Structures are given as structure tokens and as C-alpha cells.
Image (cartoon, rainbow, N blue to C red):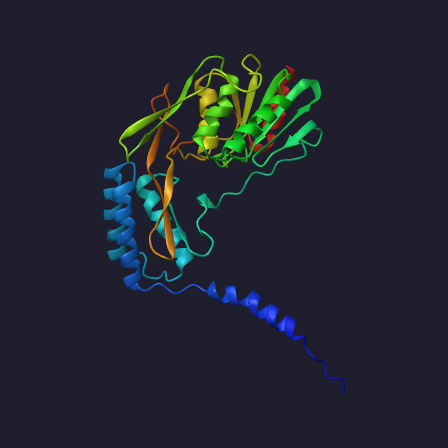
Length: 324
């Protein structure tokens, strides 16, 4: 009989690979764990949430639900994070507010899926790709600026300058935000500066920690050529969220562009992630967006497009409007 031997190196590699997986097993939550988590989460909310009165209501609701046994059957960390998120949002109606478990940040916003985009950009000419956007030109000198997010970095501003230079001579521009989940309000302001001739107050954010409001005003000068006189069409989807919504809302309220697509996700309050313990984190909105024209924002309601169509059809509708 032939005896097969296993290479010891393979065994060692298997052990190395499997060790981290064994650590992924979640510890079951006890009743004491859940009480402790809700106590700590409530304190973080009371200390940091932009609406202190709502934070107090959330605390009362969570503790009431705990006493009613709503959390009794949940021992899995991921499921508890999901349930806690649901219960908090039932009071706050704040879509940024959510809880994460330690194994991979379990709760994404409503487990959203990015919309499927067809082959509409296959014919892009002079296409340039960056980490957060891509640009190009299609027939009839129509520019396309497809923005996935707004990273917070100086290098991102340089990428914006390069992207805008690539479409500096287009006759009309389509800005695609259908897969945009948000990002830095500073980069949003920087990009918007290319579309307004004079300094324009586009957004403000009130921060609870400082009790101050920061205004975001476009710059009079940019590195490249401004596109202040061409028509702009902004594409949205239900996936468009947070900073992506602000960008669309800026163009809509300033009457600088036509929004086409779906009502956006409805998250307007920026914030930060706070550790609850070694297994859980909670994202708490610590600020509130305030539009200078409407004096409000899109929290809970989303941004309603000027022309409401399915996200997958938004590009086609924009082209038909341009060609009329």
C-alpha cells in the first residue's frame, strides 16, 4: 500500500489560516451583557447625539424594551447590533445612527445594495479614473462625472482638478451620484466651487460639541476652468446617501442643476464612531446639516429629484432631456 505523507509546511499554513477564523466565533451575550451595553450606549447618546432630548427618549425606549423582554432571545452579537440599531432608529428616525458588532461591522445602512448600472458608460472617450470618481466624454460633447464618494484628503482635491480639467470644454455635464455613499463636506464644497461663479453659501453644519455652526461657502477661484454656464444633470438613487445627498441638494436648492432618479437615502446628520466596549461600536450623529435656503435638510425624507424615475433609467432620461 502506498502511504501518502503531508508536507509539514502545508499543515503549518493551515494552522495559520484557521487560527484567525477560530477567533471570529462570537461570544454569546448574557442578560448582564445586554444591560451593560444598553447602559453604555445610552450614556454615549446622551453625551454626544446632536439632539439631547431625543437621546433621552432613546434611552427610555431601550430600557423599556429591555424590561419587556424584547432582547431576551438574542444572544448573537450581530443580531443584537441589528436589533439595537432598529430600536434606536425607531425613535430618532436618524439613518446615520447605528450599531456595529466586532465581526465586520455588522450593520450597514439598511443593508443597501448599490444600484446596478448598465453599459451606458462603455463609450466614454478620454476616460480618466480616480480612487473616488471617473470622468469622460460621450457623443455630442456631453461630459460625465461619476462620483463614488468624497474622501477627506488634499490629494483628493488634486484629483478633482485633474478630473475637471478633462471635461473643461464640454457643452453639458451629467454628474452621477447613484453609487455615492457620502464623505467629506470640505471636498463637496471644493467640487461645487467649479460650478458657481461667485462665493456661494451651499451648506452649514451645527456641531453639538462646540455649540457652533460652520458655514460651507464655495471658492471664487479654483485651479482649473469653472463650468458655471453649462447645463448640469445630477443622477440619484435610493443608495445615494449623506454627502452624496448634500451634493445633490446643493445643486437643487441653488437651482444649478436638474436632479433625475430616485429619492435618496435620507441621512443628513454627520457624526463619528464611538466604542461601546471591545465588541461593539456605535455611530452617533454629532452634527446637523442646515441648508441656507430651506433652513432644513433631508434627514429621514431624502432628496426628491426633479424628475423621478428608476435609478437604472436615470442616465437614459438625462440624455433624452439633453437632446430635446
